[in-house]
Length: 218
Image 1 (cartoon, rainbow, N blue to C red):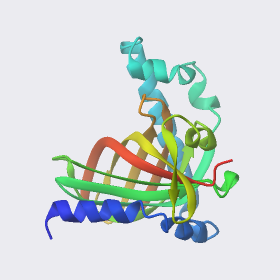
Image 2 (image 1 turned 90 degrees about the horizontal axis):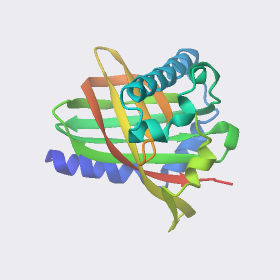
Image 3 (image 1 turned 120 degrees about the vertical axis):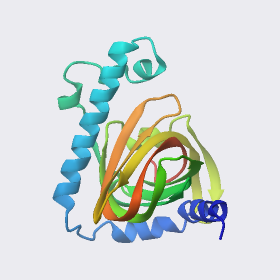
Image 4 (image 1 turned 135 degrees about the vertical axis):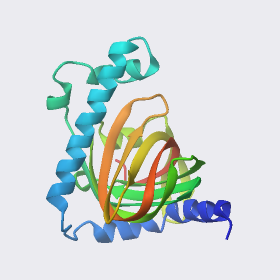
């Protein structure tokens, strides 16, 4: 099957609303390396905030700095309020043409959760595999869901909210591989990061846009 067909099928499967049931079923299942994943995701959030601060110091009037002004105070890295995400799932299929997909619930705001999926091309995309994820968000996920980035649509499971976000993601390596994926609004506001480990063949480092499908908002 041609690579374009593979990534398109991957995208369609990732955004199938029937996946919400699988997310809910996995919420209570223990994760063998949960403590390590939680620590990795918290460190990834700190790294993202520090990178935003560094960029803002160089381009203080830039869109990224303006969108994340609340994270630029000196103590933001240590004191930012966070919302736990996961356990979720992540998958990637890439050979120049890439497809990324997955989903994540927010246990403290159950049944709030979202599915994500996207495609693109990159010479840095040569990996295939799946992993379990945990993460932290620095913006209230329910507020993200209700933001202007998303709109209501009918679906086989009832009303959902759909829209797009920006993202960066990387991972891979020999044996058990680490993966990080960070989510931003289309205006550049940083939302949060998921971290995971799993069996990936190859490596990848991509960015672009993902489509999100939400359920369970209040």
